[in-house]
Amino acid sequence: MLGYGLWTLWQVWALSGGEAFSLAIGGFAPPLGINFYVDPLAMLFVAAVQLMGLLFWPFKIDRETPRRQSLMLLLLAVCRGLGLFGGLFSFYVFWALVLVGSFCFLAALACGAVYVAPFFSVLLRGLGCVLCLVWLRLMCGDPGAFFLSAFAQLAPEQLNNPLGLAAFVAILIGVGVKAELFPVNSWVPEVYATAPARVSAILAGLVSKLAVLIVVRLLVLLFPQPEAAQVMLLLGMLGVISGELAAWRAQDLKRMLAYSSIGQLGMIFIAFSLPAGGGLYAGLALTLHHMLVKPGLFMLAERWGGSLQRLRGAGFVSPLGAGLFVLFSLSLVGMPPLPGFWAKLLLISGLAGQSEPLYMMALLVFLSATVVEASYLFRLAAALLQRSPEEVSKMAPLPERQGLLVSSLLAAGLISALVMIAPLAEGLKEVASEAGDVSGYVKHVFPSRGGAGQ
Image (cartoon, rainbow, N blue to C red; front, top):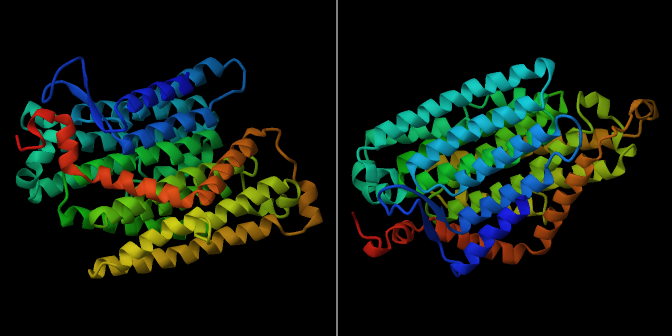
């Protein structure tokens, strides 16, 4: 079913000649009704949703399997809708459904005291939905404004003011709850440390990236002013600092990965705050790299959960797991020639090319955080490979092997990206260029107007 959904959407994309197009749901032409917008960026994220669904599908057969599979289908369906949203109404509906779907999926796989973490996260995410609703109230004055394309035409006049900046801050914080953005990311370590590794991998590798997609769409179409980018830059820097330092101090593997995810998302927000198309290019590269690496690390944590002291010598019990962990860690740190190096090089080049002091400070934060990240990841890798017979004798491999299998597939994708780095870079540059074309977006939704103002 998941593969059929991806194949159907790919056929529609092929029939359009690879050109972006807008779907009017129910036959209501804009500015009325609801529309989906399909372009290379949306196709990229929808394909990621389908592939993540296949990788993390609950194949284990037991009494709870039908419920888990149904919740998984619900979560994937609303994630696809969120990736294709073309209006404010559809955005809010799918955003609320992602909240419900992710909470139900998390709670269905939890047990005992683990229910506290989902409840805490749903409170913060509910606050995010309220902030999104406040943002909609600040922005929407007429029915046509529910289309992003219509508001993109009005944005230079109506949103380039303090009220528009307040609306952007509201949506940034509201969506940032799922995007692990500072300061509304306190739920991340609690949920990721207690949830099953499969759930943590989906939330960190998929749902958080869809939240980033929303921010990018809104920043490009509605809030191109420098003040909005600077707000995102400041929050990204705070996320990097808090996440990486907390990961360095963590003594539990899942918590370390959770805090590291906060720091990585902060780097992605820093990248997207860069002006012009270079920021989109660097941000998408970092996002796709994180979608491969972080779920692989979380799936390894299903085999090696618990205290870091317990992992001394664990690499000799599972050499494949140790090799995968080292590979993911090296790419995450940015060791050449792995894909993580090229993604981080784009960010460094973009920050170094700016003259504003705030971007220079961001570059210093980014480089310092990379050193901290290398410190705790290499320290853990060294512990995995430390020959300690007494510790190794206490290590018992877990019967669950799906974590190693999924991590191996993700590692194969990482190596494939390294081999095809040049064509992938060109393709990603084209995706970023089209995603930043506001006039093209408006033209595809309102073809009769040719992108002219309303």
